[in-house]
Image 1: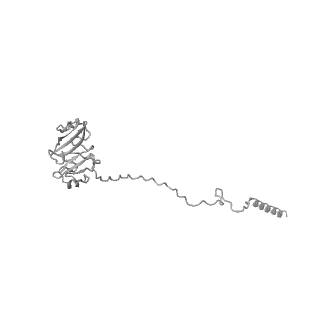
Image 2: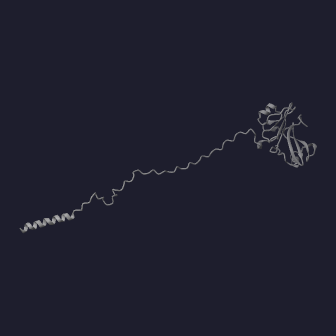
Image 3: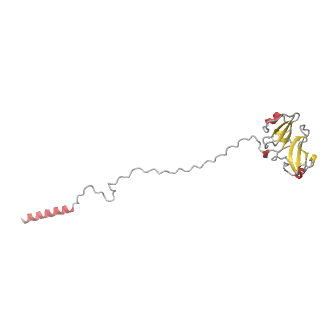
Length: 213
């Protein structure tokens, strides 16, 4: 009787121990330590593409627009004499002179025709056309010089130094009109006019031009 009672007590104690050691039941599954909270919404998958700023393109050196061909020859390339200026020469016919492209239209209402160089300022750089000699005279303007360096605006003293052969037709070197030999062309002369000690007119012309005095 005592053995049965002892066995019952032992079983009772074992059951109590087992009950105490069993973990208490929790509603829902407990998340393992360190795991994300299952109630938290999952992060959206896919890494946003970062916009990489495009490298600023280095502008290519823009080539300057080609200079348009001018109908006016550059004045720094023009020298008066001893045979003419640029492609325009003494003795050319009207057709030949026009073909150079250097002249404005001729006025032929008088016996001798007259034109102007396109490169010259308005009403400067007159050109005279003789009916017998062709282009008989070509006039300079302030930007034009002779091969020896004479130009309009120089002093009479400088003119005489450059052209010691200058000879007065009227007046003198300070106030007058005269001519000088043209180096390189014995058929032509430089007609030079001075006023108040300054050169005010310079022409290349045939010695025997027949359009004016």
